[in-house]
Length: 418
Image 1: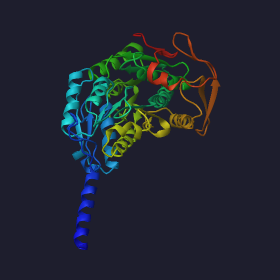
Image 2: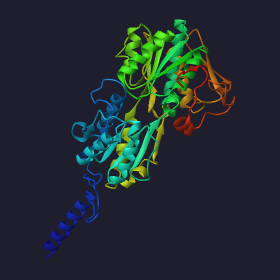
Image 3: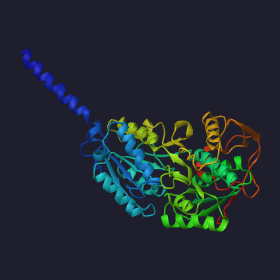
């Protein structure tokens, strides 16, 4: 009898443990979500991703996100070949295509869906409500909810300031104060506007006479337009350095073809232009993607816990967290002492002592031994119409403005389309 009771008890415990291993959708509940919930078993967990260009890109925006997702998954012991579901080449101006991409990933069993482009924002917000048992995470946007939908971005303007230093020092070496910048947009979006401004301020910190000429293409990614815009900057303003906020390496290729230099974006583009690319403002997206996947796995079957596990609906990090940086400097192309100046400013930003959009202007004394002394001078931060944005000595513009409402260019930015 004791053996019989022990067998019954053991069987009951086995069933109980099995039931705890995976949470089921209650019978009778209405859910359109084919992936019934976030799984506890890491091997069963599926990550979905929606890309604006091809997953096979070798540089640029989608490339860097794809690299970040796959690296994060591998770091967590996951197999991207089996557990990463991708729909790529999804136009972020086509709401139907975005809806279809989300539905496809949901139908394939995605537990967590990353959408990397700004234009995915409205469809993802709606689908987060339609599929409450799937986690949605949207890059570069601002919408979220309190449960299964968050947004993520970073202080890329900090990295752009560093690349601006490289551009400014090269402009000094060349004796050419004209720097070009191919921009997806400008003052329409704080993301692009703050990037242009930070790049210009970095260049002006080493070359006060530098002028950043902006050529806006009014789209996040069009390789033909990117190429045309870069060539126009060289032809019109004789720019010696070309910066960019657009998706591909085309501006850097055009710079190389014309014998001038450049600063890329998203990924290190030195391989594309080995003799001309100086450095790039880059993302270490794996820092975010690892944190997000870990938070999703910790939901233990309840997608509504995701935002709580992420400690809020908006993720925003910078140099201090290693989410952004400047790519390794191309010493064969860069001006002497560029690395030393960039390193000194990076340390200043990471320490929290100073940030880019403050009423404190940086300049530098470079010793014969290559040592760098940073000089901080209280000075008004002024826009290109003469308005004081931040008074001398005051702290940096707030995050809300940098992320959401910055709509002016600083002095030294020439943006004729604005």
